[in-house]
Image (tube, rainbow, N blue to C red):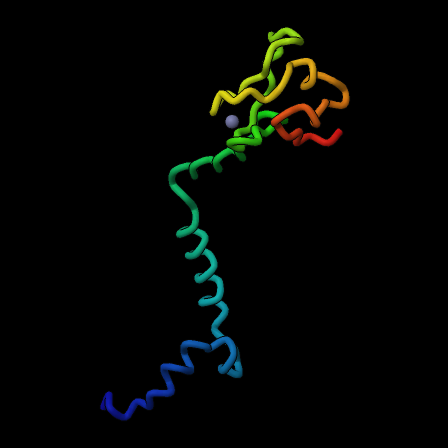
Length: 113
Ligand SMILES: [Zn+2]
């Protein structure tokens, strides 16, 4: 008679590790982890994690927020322009000054030496 089976038997088998006084049979314990390991072993190599977006540029254009590096080929009296919005951000000499002459620039220096 299948109806005579008490329903709590099912619950007991679900958490047999806790409820069963004798504990689960050792064979079952050994089978479960190995089965899991088989499932979790990927057949194909996992995709490499995306490289962290390296911050480009030590400067940030104040008008538009784009990060950039002042071009090194500019002459000191040339204006550095934002590569994104083309705003004049200041003289190349002010960018190259050490420390940069940020008071005259429309860009923010992100690197704090
Ligand atoms: Zn800009």
